[in-house]
Image (cartoon, rainbow over all chains, first blue to last red; front, side):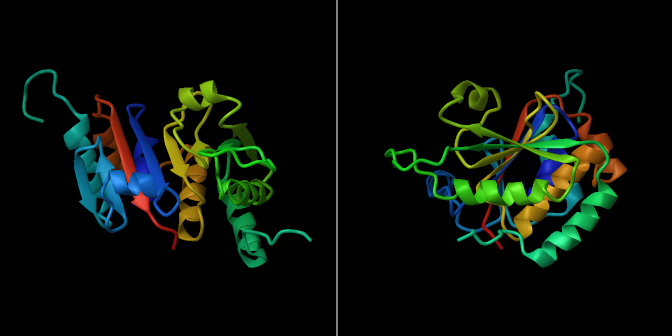
Length: 74
Length: 153
């Protein structure tokens, strides 16, 4: 998932991706309630555990990152 | 006594071959770290900074196209802020002025592959993602910040 997140971030300048090694930053792990890894958090509120396929990961990014200015369904 | 290499000799041979084959443009890896000091200042202890730096020195030593820039987090807080670096050790990948991809901690084992994959993507300008994913990601028009929490494997 770390690799996927980085690849996704390199596609669009709106996207940034951090991979965090939790054993080194227990404060962060605690703040995000990390109980299992990998855990992915997108814009603080979308979160999912475990590895996901690329298409699903991209879909989750789109759900957060696309706002349709035309008001049509996206 | 010399410190043990972080990347095994066997892995180095393999990596050198991969990098020679796969890298095109030069890539600078930025490490936000802390200068070695005899004094430990409370709240400024970074036990993994020296090993992370050694790991990256070994990595960039495997290809003439790789460069390492080490930035002291405490001496250059404005650079850290510009690049959105909040803690150390932090590895930042990207061309100048774009720090969209970061790794916090020491990338051991499988996580080193994450760094190498990012380097390859930047160097070649070719994404490992499918055309379909890439097309969809072009629609993103709001800031998206992804955090992935991992443990070393």
